[in-house]
Length: 484
Image: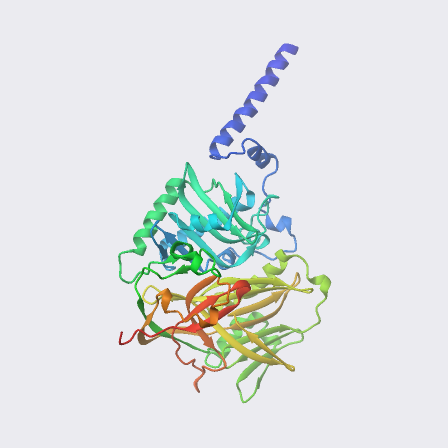
């Protein structure tokens, strides 16, 4: 009898071992087996957000499309770098894959190896796809965005850029640039065959032989020693076409044209609890109740404030504050702005709240995709506050506390002009002492100066945006190519 029990016990052990073996095989190449697989069985990931954070508002699945929206995705074919069109199907496919790769980074499912900045710059020059974000996205924000609440102890504190090499040995190469340096991972969420196919399809969409496509190079590739203040992976037009045709960009302010519709969309079912008044010769609409006030001015800025005093103990967890801020942003974005795209451009905090800023990318297949920036000054008490982002919003664990938002209807004008886009045509007088993190072509509005009597912004041409450390930036006019 004892012998039969022993045989049964051995059979059970063999059955369990076979289940683990099959699980390991299914999970793909994982250099840490069998420990990661065993951990995943006995400690399954906590992907139930409401269970992990019972006070968290419902998560909108589209939130990650904003928070993890790269401001630029580029493809390198080993010879040049090309910006991937945002309106292409391949761009959307790459974004969906990036969400899976964020899980791999958080879960540290395979090897993790720190690499230096010079090695990172060399990696960017390989056949690869690079996702760039305007701000190092905090680990907590990534977890909240994808609903993945089981980050390993070795997960990075943030991710600033993500590089994907379609085939590196037997797997896909995955690298993350963080605030503390670059890190290598071995992902298992995406196969080599899938990544190579998508890379090939994306390359065909770009059509690198077209005269309308710009070929970029990194500073490391064309002479890092000559530009010591530049990051090695900064892209510049060195070998591509020297001029490009641009159209003007304009915007209109919808507040006083669609006031009834707009106020209902912003205030929702609570609109009857607000009193309305106009100030400054009808240049501002104000909606106010016992706890909230909204101001809409004729420049296009909507300002929201929570009136009661805020207690430091209500600051709470970033997860909940982020959820409150995103609920506010998405409610207005979904109701009013099908275009342009939003992306996260900064995150910070003080003693009472968390602050998030977002900016716009606007464009289409005909005119291209361009970041759009706004500058606006407003007076509060005796203080002049300057806003440099499309959206500035603060929140704590209880609610959204304040928001300033450039709500405008943008469109390209019919006027076109050629501008020089080569790197050596940039007037570097103002940036000779800057630490340069990025160079881009953008549209820039000074909202206090560009309005006409019909509340329409005067048309603007694109400018260079030279970005330094911690979000500082210089805007430099582009040189006209007319007559050359």
